[in-house]
Image (cartoon, rainbow, N blue to C red; front, side, top):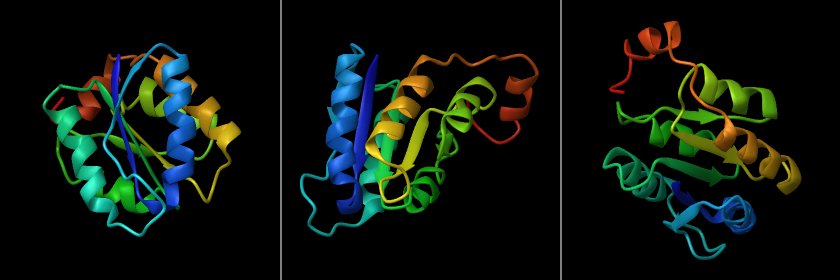
Amino acid sequence: MKVAIACDHGGFVLKLELMRVLKDMGHEVLDCGCDSEASVDYPDFAAAVCDRVVDSSCARGVLICGTGIGMSMAANRDKKIRAALCHEIFTARMSREHNNANVLCLGARVIGPGLAGEMLREWMNTEFAGGRHLRRIEKFSSC
């Protein structure tokens, strides 16, 4: 699967680790920036990933900032994006299984790289359950 990933300065180090996790899982990774810990504006990088998910050039996206809050707010501006801010494995799994999240948002200053990697693996390996969940998602999202 092709996955777009981006971060702001607060998520740069974690982005590098998660890119390795995705590649180790056999996924193709598109790095949409940023390229250092120099201060940048997170909405620009959220847009870069979301554009790739919306145009289907990437199946899913991962966004990382200090808390994950800014990235999730910026990403969810698009009706075709279902970005989930997760802090542990259960919500990462449920965001895919029940909400068909297509973007995972993480806070590099909130969770460590070990947990982030486990969450990403769970998120990537979880399928959408469909059924009643699809009906609910269709009420707020262009699936």
